[in-house]
Image 1 (cartoon, rainbow over the protein chains, first blue to last red):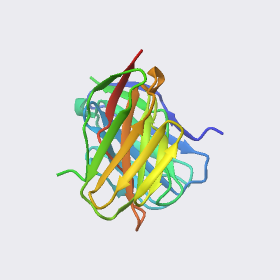
Image 2 (spheres, rainbow over the protein chains, first blue to last red; image 1 turned 120 degrees about the horizontal axis):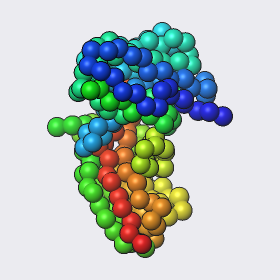
Image 3 (cartoon, rainbow over the protein chains, first blue to last red; image 1 turned 90 degrees about the vertical axis):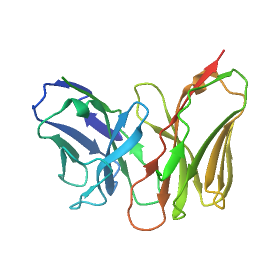
Image 4 (cartoon, chains in turn brown, red; image 1 turned 180 degrees about the horizontal axis):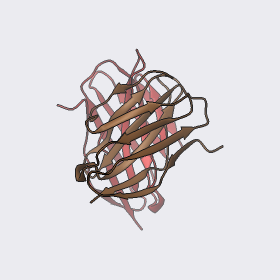
Length: 112
Length: 112
């Protein structure tokens, strides 16, 4: 049982480049989330998808876009990467409100 | 004021000590309270889950929720070096499909 799988695990981008972070879950969860984690800042929500076909902004959405491709997959796109987007990105999923969220292993992104 | 406040530490204790980790929150709508443990370069994993007020015990870990004070705690008894990690509190409302809100996390080191 893979749980939540993120790809890639590591990435280095140059300023202005674009990329898509992929996330897939095999637990039949309805909701999926993208967080970023920076030193001293904890986990901050970028975007989330409460159910297939819906997406909503979180605390720090600027510079990002998302796509809920189907129930399993939720991707995060950086259109024009900036050094301020250097961070560790976590994807998470959960079944319904009130239940625990399961996290992927993270993507370490460096923008130079 | 952030919805969830957590002292980031770091906290360093000797092996065998009792550890107390705490979070305060401002939103009285929170009903579900969780503690996640995150080892270095890994994704967060659920450690404890509590609904509404009260205590919950699991082995060396005890979670407490005091909704009247908007205060939650995690106690670790007989702490071990393997408990060295970052501990994040998280909470969720009881309505809608809103995401978990996390504290900044407390970095704990247990010294042998």
